[in-house]
Length: 365
Image (cartoon, rainbow, N blue to C red; front, side, top):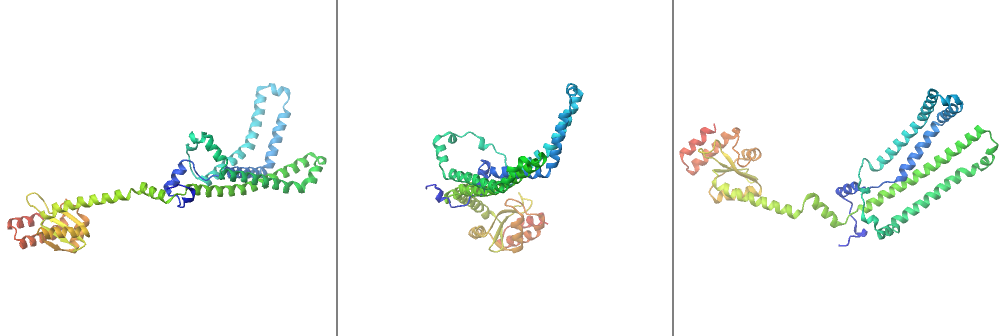
């Protein structure tokens, strides 16, 4: 059967999703992480702008105030460097922490916890120039190209929207005092960066939605693949059916050998059947030699009738023996009295020896 994309109409199974995830075939947008990091960094810079500027001024003063003698004195130089390093750490460390946390959160929100080296494994298909050309001119490459053009267009539009109303201010910036020029430039850069970061974030979310849809489409399966997958997960139905048939045949052979030797078959009367055998010379108590429900119970009753084994209807006792005693086990003491009464009745009914009847009763009391 042709395995084309048009025939992949079935949703991927959990096993297929897990295998694809282990291979690194997941929906993920690198632009989303980058946009989130950029937005977080800009917000932090705006919030800590005063502290950062103050720290930079402090570092500049410390460097400029150091005279030539101080630079040649190891102790003074060490103190100056320690002061500069402490200020830089206070400025840079929060920014690095925010960038790290935002990047981790953005990645975790997309793919969760995942560590795989499969995408880094060398592949002959990736080195094949024909496959490379097919990927370059594939529908996915066209979509990526269009997305890139759209991003450039949106960013250009945002830049125009931000800068055009401030053209006159930019032309007059050279006439402003230094601090005013610095403040105006910082405000412009922040506004432009914030708007671009928001635009990139929106585009990245759209890209992530597209990646999810594309990945979902790539993972879709044909009906035949779903059947094969279910066979691998649950086992081949034919093998399972054959296994059940073999188990049934073995059970029938066991009851064919056990029921003719039984002393009595206790029934429910039609749903359950339990075959009981007792030999005072070899057993401490009566033993369940066969049991079954429904069709198996019917087969036990048929074998009992065929071989002249008495059938006694005792609903509560049959249910209790079927649930609590396995084939080949002796009955528990709580059933001694009830089973002894049935055996005594059966022995009397069938005319079995008084010796066997007497032997059955004392050992079960």
